[in-house]
Image (cartoon, rainbow, N blue to C red; front, side, top):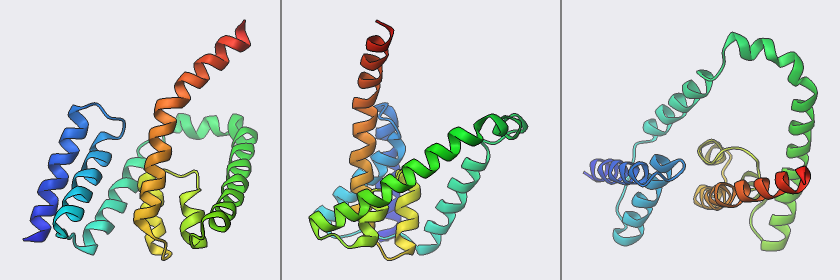
Amino acid sequence: MNIMLTLVVALAGGLLGLKMKIPAGTLIGAMVAVAIMKIGTGRGEIFYSYKLVAQIVVGGMLGLNFTMDTVKGLRNLIFPAMVVVVGLTLFSIILGFVLSRLTGMDLTTALFSASSGGLTDMTLISGEYGADTPTVALLHLMRLITVISVLPTVIGALMRWVQA
């Protein structure tokens, strides 16, 4: 019964997030709704196999982004990709170590929390490595909300300043 209740609450939260046009609203709405239910009632459960299905679906969705044009365009992206991959990876590792040292957070959780991956992906993967997944999810949610709400304004201001 807990599983069915959890799924119904997740569905309601996801639909609400979608209706409110929140970026990644279905994910964020479902997560917030189930978190409120769990905190308020102490109830909630989902089979481990559902997590595996979620990973398969996310992997499939990511795979659908690739086309032959994507593959052909890789030649032009090799250098920018290497700069982004190396830069973000090094920055994420350094930030993870700093976060762990400053807060006392365990290193695994800090490294996954500071990674540049997506909220869903990092939360799912972090659990496999023994990280505190609620902490990883919350820190990525805070990052996502900040990036979505602040970065467009900052980029717009920078572009106006550069073009002036």
